[in-house]
Length: 389
Image (cartoon, rainbow, N blue to C red; front, side, top):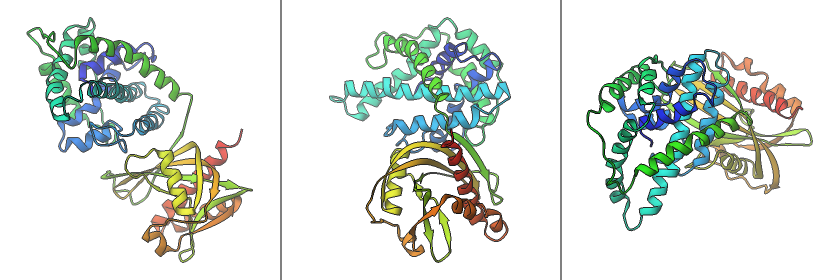
């Protein structure tokens, strides 16, 4: 991914365009904050999370760029849009700019150079040549931009803060001191004239073009809002150890919604399930709809993300409005779903509201059902809002 001064230079170029009037220091800090996980234990798994990279592929081998943008967009709506504290808002925007910069670095530098040089080089040979040049060109950039001193002044005057389980203030503080006192404390000029991979021209082109690309992406975020919601269950222990993304489909025909039903327990649920591999969230929704209900659908629009916190879990459910393509009448259930007797139920919308609206009945006798029904009731309410003009 991009080096830290590369991130801060691109962020600096965006200060005025993004209207960062307050919290410029925190904006610059946010633009490098995701990399602070390098100063924590088990940093690789934390790096995936801090860079909003879940369900995008192995680190360094991106398989699904669409999911990466969806994750960044979800972070934008969850943390930036509703934040009233301007310093915190600027910090969160900085994190978004960091991740979008890495998105473009992956495409324009990392993948582009691999395409150019492999073959004849294999991946190990490519990494051996690329890695030292990547480190060196970032330090060269620091010595060859006019605003380096101003950027480091903003970084020095910033205030570290936690961002839930994404980044820790303690790690950010250690990273900040390393950047100022060690990494960019460069007494001697850096020479990159012999670079064969990451050249001076390539770096200049990157920092010239990427600010506009990032600005346009953020501008588009504002035009395509997906409602963000958080539900915290009573059994949440206060820290997150596990993360799961799932996708669920709302399919309505003739005033009835398609639900999955467990006859034995009497439970209902909106069909859907967990993301597999590196599939798109829309593809996941369509696959789950087909497997659980036998209905081939098209996921037309994502209208809601519900973040559930329970036990040690963060469970993010992406809800889509679906169109029916074909009812194959053939389910492909998991063993657990077969044992539960999963069957289809076309339920009038009003009745579905009544079913899920009774979530409080389960509050003290079955916390799992309480959380499930509360979530599905919220999803139905937002669906009604999404289709009301």
